[in-house]
Image (cartoon, rainbow over all chains, first blue to last red; front, side):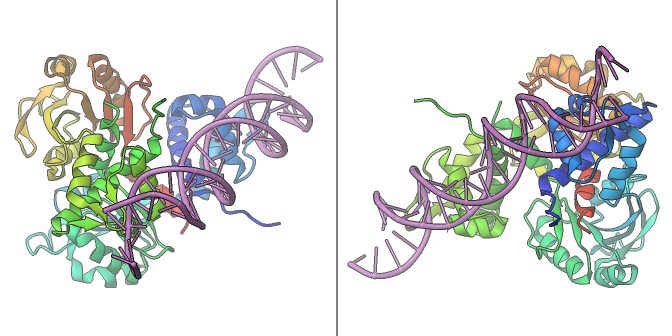
Length: 207
Length: 207
DNA sequence: TAGATTGTTAATCGATTAACAATC
DNA sequence: TAGATTGTTAATCGATTAACAATC
């Protein structure tokens, strides 16, 4: 039997499911259904069941899903049941906000290295874990030494491609790019983009 | 003739095209092609031509697209050739970073009102334009008075739904939501989400 | 048992791509 | 003119949905 590749679009929805399950857990709930999840997320119940069916059977007919169980399963599937070290490049306003962000805790990620090219910033502690900002010329070595697989780019657009290149050459396989530019990486490397301007411009058409 | 609705997914790519054109302009280029744009963005040239064809004919056979002309056309189509006032709710670390962000300039958006519920923050100037943080209980009134159509939510997850509700009731039609929770709004209101954890969790599956 | 909800199938719907006539 | 590239068509590909047997 051939294991068919899971569509990217399905994998992309799992973190949304995970987030919803996390809230249900926080509310002290034990059981949910594809219907309830769908209502909360604005997704059809059929789609949720179909998405989950790519990975196994997690529910009980007539009952629904055990929230805690499904949560754990999805965390394993997404490989966020452990902790990924993350290298952050860019210690300006944006990088600072990312380093200060408390939302990574418990979600599978921890920023353990921060880089910049400005002498004034290098050597200072930054973020919730008071990490010492390193010179960006130590980026490759640090990634290699600690076997870091996840990077965040928070540099100006003009520097993003070079940073991505360095990250990839050193072994990074997943890049969250806050720089407002499309970067080119080998197909074995994943990139996700965060650009508030793009988000806003996607809505004004409808106004 | 029926004007068929443009697929959301097509509209969603236009800001990416716009961004690429903006860079080409900055490089001093005058003409580009669907092939070149596609190569830069990792999109097929056919898709770019097809997407644009929903809105009109912007190119010349044998030549390609005049960058400046296409840029202006897309800005008009997306309605970002003017300036949208934006109300930002949440003046914590994240809200501060958004208010400090210089990337909105020239892209069609300007934050003109900032709100929080913490007395310590209300009344202080914030962001690149030194806007005085207002009490969030003035949110609805301000939105109505200035006819603001665009909102950004940068509150804790637990407050996001209530803020969205207030915004929508006061007339906001587009919400950029940084809170890590799916919010429910009428179908006439657009929402875009920015959640770095979701972005990261979409990649770890492949590691 | 009766009611509820899953997992899965098949049909529908929609998006992408390849190809090419038109034409600059 | 010859070469290049658009805009568009039709085919392909993929995603979503409706429906329901299975079963808790």
